[in-house]
Image (cartoon, rainbow, N blue to C red; front, side, top):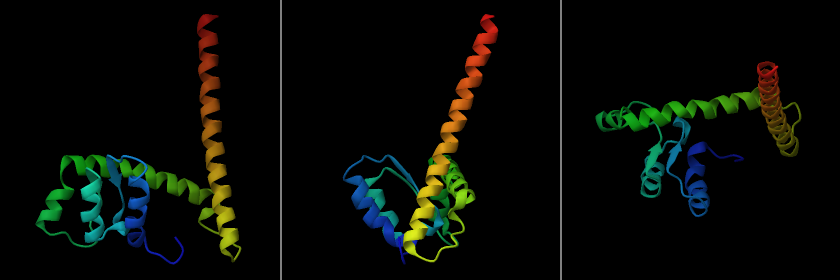
Length: 137
């Protein structure tokens, strides 16, 4: 996504992914909103969660206050949480000045995030085994 805005990549991303995977719900943040993007995605994906930039008219306000929209919009916060987690592991600040080095920073941040997730899972499994051993003793 070099020198592109979020709203410019939606159509290409949709073409690439919908040909491979059946998508039931797709959630975006306001940066991806464009009337053409939403209209095209609604023909392919049953539930498109794409909040409008700026002030909503009454029809858009009604759409964004539907139960399904709110449900999946609230789930989108988990995605934003994962993005924040990557930022805390080095993606937010890249001191090197090239695209190659930025890509390296992103890859290392993803590896660090995955290692933390694996570590949390291993610790939870270890604690669960310890509790089982204490109960049987």
